Image (cartoon, rainbow, N blue to C red; front, side, top):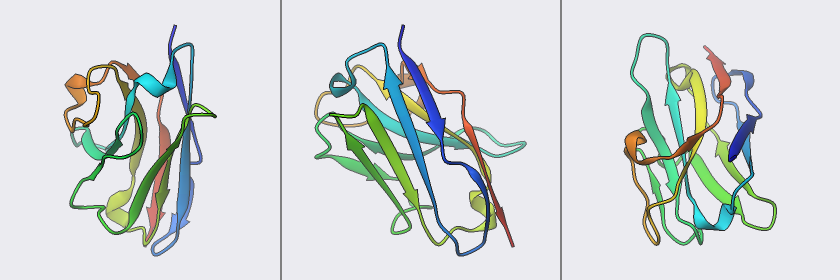
Length: 126
């Protein structure tokens, strides 16, 4: 059974940084494209960033481009999200997800991800 476990969330002041990590077990990590999504209270879950299986192809939501960096380490079954210049509107539960379908590209649609973590809370105070 594939399991994804996120860590690294917390409370940070606006302008600060956080690094989220997601460890994947029970599957072959290098065969998954990986994505980060977030869901704020009262809002729908939205795409944040994604990285292809090899790490060559990366895509960001416009709202985080230039502030967030996604990376992966296929030797450690880990995907990370480095978040900088955080804003109160970045407050949300952040989820990592694994996609078995895309080989050399990524998806921004949560319906195309097969496995999900339980989420980690990120709160940015003003």
